[in-house]
Amino acid sequence: MKIDGNEIRPGNIIEHQGQLWRAVKTQHVKPGKGGAFLQVELKDIRHGTKLNERFRSSESVERVRLEQKEYQFLFAADESYTFMDQETYEQVQLNGDILDADQARFLQDGMIVQIEFYDEEALGVSLPERVTLQIVEADPVVKGQTATSSYKPAMLENGVRILVPPHIESGTSVVVSTVDATYVERARD
Image (cartoon, rainbow, N blue to C red):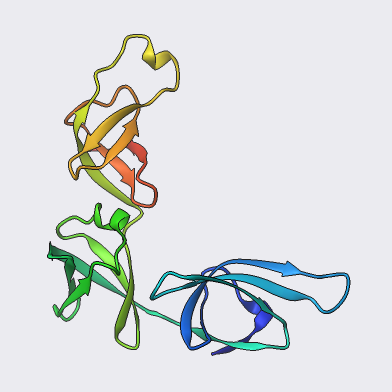
């Protein structure tokens, strides 16, 4: 689908210079001399390289729509991850480079994820924003520490270290953000 150069929004996928790019940031610029343009920071979907490009409203670019489909995570083995289609029960095996290391740490057996496809090629995996994990190791509470808003280090069952409030103890289940690996709240039973 063709769109004008000034219609690009953050998150849009466009085809530019024979590659697929995700618009990360956009800024409208109106210089004192000459026509206005849109300054766009682009990130290559396949390789992760970045590019800053200017698009005028008279230019047109090809906007690409990715197909998103729900898959269930089955297992990881030798730098690859196996997922199962929820409708057809077909299995897909993806290389470790599709998932970044931060995402891979939060994959759990049976987790439902969104995989983005372009012409049958998997380009990315989106995890749920939050997961519930158990604390396996936490520093003891220091008396008087609850008076301030301090946090203490703790280790999750998947080996990730996070900061938690002082009242959280070993064995407690907590909700953690998969985006930035931070404590959100105590899990409700």
